[in-house]
Length: 421
Image 1 (tube, rainbow, N blue to C red):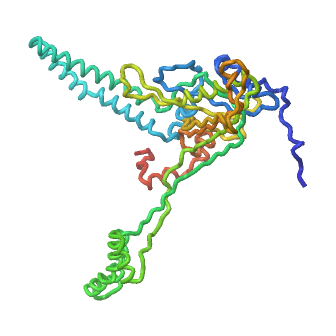
Image 2 (spheres, helix red, strand yellow):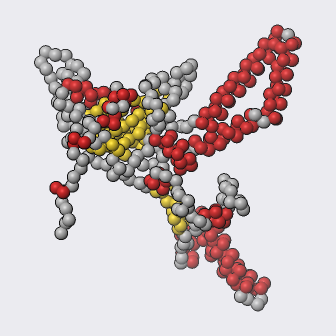
Image 3 (cartoon, rainbow, N blue to C red):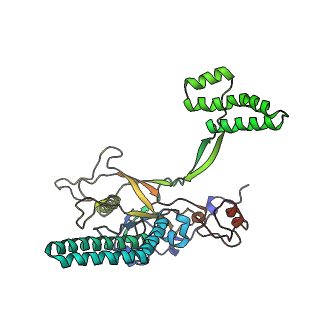
């Protein structure tokens, strides 16, 4: 017999909530640019909702208002957990440190001094040589300046969008919330020519070891080993050679399949929403939501004299799930995502629009579709690890006591237990 039913479940009374979207609207920086649907989202019967924060790229020319103290989730994870993000940014940071050390080394300093002396010599010879010296000097200074900036960004930067802005979208909870976590494993077929040589070699060793007449045994063993080697050669050649080998010997080579872990898969999330605006103001809000998402999902042509050669990547997004103005701990967290696809259907049930006779079409007014379906496809920028699931690094008591010895045996640490990779 059940100990309770649905009528026994009690949540905080609606009056105890701080108000619709309290965590956003009470923050003056967010309140200015929060777009929501429906308009009464966060009220007592709509206390569950999801929030999409937007992180813009560093080099964008369409800068929004930044939010002081709010860091994109992927950047925060990299700072809090270091290597757990497992991306290349950390490796490039090490490269940046190396480049910085090399550029400040005595050898490079002396080489730069020698080049400077050569340029001064050019300048002292005459006008033409002086022009050459100035040109070479300018090129050197230009590359040095670019190199310094690149080194600095390699040391401290990230490929992720680094700046949280106040543009925020708050939507009702979608009908589906699927969290799929995939791991890739490769089927490795160890069988082949090398396997045949090894197996044939082992038969030779066994025959010689167990025989008193080694030369005769060796000769006999060569004959016994030939099918192993021929099988490997036939497999390498493929086709008719494999058929011929099977016909001659009546067997096929064992593929010797092993399953080896390859890599995790980045998670993808799809959220679908149906909009039925109930007023002109709510209709305008729907249009604002779609426009903001489309805008931040698009790239832009880099400015600053690049002649259209470079693109600035689209913005990135942090997704959170709320109840009564607070993060809902019952739903797993999602790290920073990119918005790979926006699917907007302005006629999901056949086109129908609000109309006022005699009025021209206006945003949210005459001509506004009665229903709009919005589909958003996100892809997470970080792999899921044990650290990200727990939200912390392992404690001292959790660490494997034999891990140093295990890594020594694997050749990943030296005799003193220090990492060598």
